[in-house]
Image 1: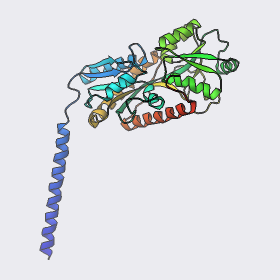
Image 2 (image 1 turned 90 degrees about the vertical axis):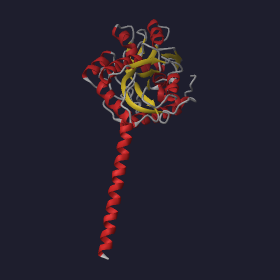
Image 3 (image 1 turned 45 degrees about the horizontal axis):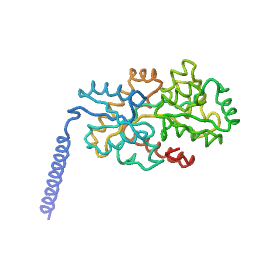
Image 4 (image 1 turned 30 degrees about the vertical axis):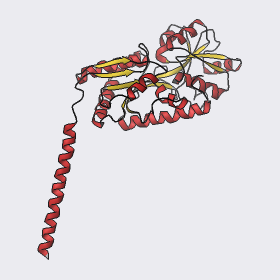
Length: 333
């Protein structure tokens, strides 16, 4: 009986050892079959026209990745429908890491407002959060207000207050609609085809105010042609430390800023996503890049791994879905 048990024990051990060796070989083979990356040029699709915050930050990142990863990272602008055109294009590309997307906050807002050809959490994989820029309420100097309390007192007396933005379905648009909802005042959205024309009309006095990301209006603030009234973010920004926030005025939960994310088609191999996340975090949070962003009135959001990046995007999807529901804003508003 003892011999029989010993033989069974030896047979079981041998089986487990062989199984372990087979599993190790299989896993090792799978990793060995994962091709090195990148071995050819990578296209980064920017969902907006050249010259804006999304484009500027993307080109700076692409230059650094090209240097560090020894392959060209090429920017391809595919603007249209508040970023929807470029986003839907990338969602349909091969999940091999050679076509990536950079999109702004509208990436998570659009699906809450209208029917789009992508799911922000299923069609693409969030790889990294690149940068953020505070959204500001700015007014023409003729508006009799120098701070948020004075601005709200003035707004209370107006029958209608047009506010310009870079277009519908972005964070600046929704920020203005949220402002109207929480104050009860008559702020009326005027969508433009880009930040520049909206800003120019505010400077010229064609509209009294605009809601814009800080990069788009910083030069006009510095020259005195626009007056900043408030930062729409939850916390004061290091870029504009003197500007109070909507939350400081008593509007709890008000938190609006423009942020940029980089995405890959769903199904992109995990080793590629992990490597890209690590490299992008290194680039975007380097002292040199932080200074470049500061000069452009934007800043990084800090190092976030893949799990933290997805959690951030999930939180933004939920936040904007709630804001859209509460404000009742439609895609054509």
